[in-house]
Amino acid sequence: MFKAKTVTRNILDRVLRLAGARVITEKEEEASRARYARVVQNLYDVYAEHLFPDLREREGRIPLLAKLVGTEMGEAMHLLHWLQNAQDGGEGDIVEMGVAQGATSAFLANEILNTQRHLWLYDSFQGLSRPTAQDKLINDIENRGSMDRYESAMSFPQQLVWQRLGSVGFPAERTHIIAGFITPEVRTLPDVVAFGYLDFDLYEPILTGLRLLGPRTRPGSVLMVDDYGYFSSGPERAVKEYLAEDDRFDLAVGPTSAGYFCALTRR
Ligand SMILES: C[S@@+](CC[C@H](N)C(=O)[O-])C[C@H]1O[C@@H](n2cnc3c(N)ncnc32)[C@H](O)[C@@H]1O
Image (cartoon, rainbow, N blue to C red):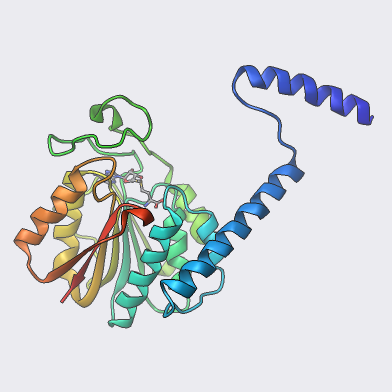
């Protein structure tokens, strides 16, 4: 029996190798997940002790950190820091613009589970909108060759977001998922925004998002913009244009060692 298993695995391995893949047993997968979770925990401890000593602990945070997709550990730690600051500043809901499969949404949801705050999630669920002339390709992250070819990239079904929110037990009554391409006409918005994470990747939707959320912030609110100087030149340009329109925000650009993002704190 053991021999038959080994022979089958060897044959499968050879076939899969032709496609650049290989067999991994469930046990190996589990071991690799556990190893990764330990690395995340270690990194978390170092960040928390040396860079964010004021960060309060939250149950369930580490497994969700390990499940983030495309958000570096350093950026996630800054996100926690800004989110805590924004919540300590007073009332308001939490917004994510550009949610993809909902990994960051679940991470945010867990942080506000024991509060009365609502979670507002915006996504086309049809991937990126059409890049504009303001979107110069800086990093060809999916090897598509040109910016134009990123239209519709990163498309995920809304159902995945509900599943991830369900897995952290976030109540549906406090969840608002607004599906569709973002436009200045969107009216389904929170009255007060405490924290917004804008991750649409492109110039036009980021500028639209800032114009929708900015007027709904209060002193101490934070709007964090991802991909500032990464992938497309658009988000950085949108932030600068928005700050020229609304001078009530202080801009902090994240250290590139932690990722590419910035935070706008309302004075
Ligand atoms: C980088 S992904 C978001 C990743 C997510 N924040 C996370 O951390 O896992 C970008 C998302 O923005 C959405 N998106 C891009 N342009 C949009 C637009 N104009 N309107 C609505 N959604 C858009 C895409 O569908 C995609 O899911």
